[in-house]
View (cartoon, rainbow, N blue to C red):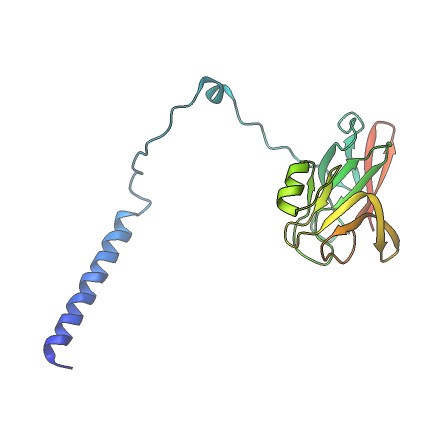
Length: 190
């Protein structure tokens, strides 16, 4: 390569490096942030205060009351320890029509995806392409749906939450739920 080209390339490289250093320095967190234009909030927006984060109960043990789950399809999230040495996993208890309470793990069986309890029937139609007449449990990673009103095959027999659509291996992992007076108690995982 001619000597002129080498100098030209070296100069271009130095200019680019200087520009990058200047840009990094300019966006440094030690400088005060530039004010940004913001929209004007309505009186109702400014009056609302954020709700404090709800602390989920940890089971085995009490997870809800019958008053909290008074209506059919009402639900409450909680955490459950599968054994004393494991991290708690997200779970939910649902009050089914007819008075039964069903608890299940929100972790996909044999996977890492978090299941969702979907009460919005339009969401089931748009996100899962399924026409449902009641809430269902969905797996957003695979598109599988589980019917809370039916039983499907599990390793130890029938488990509530039959696979209605999709390629799920089995229903969600069940959690034994007991009603003790007004308390709903999660006893153990399957």
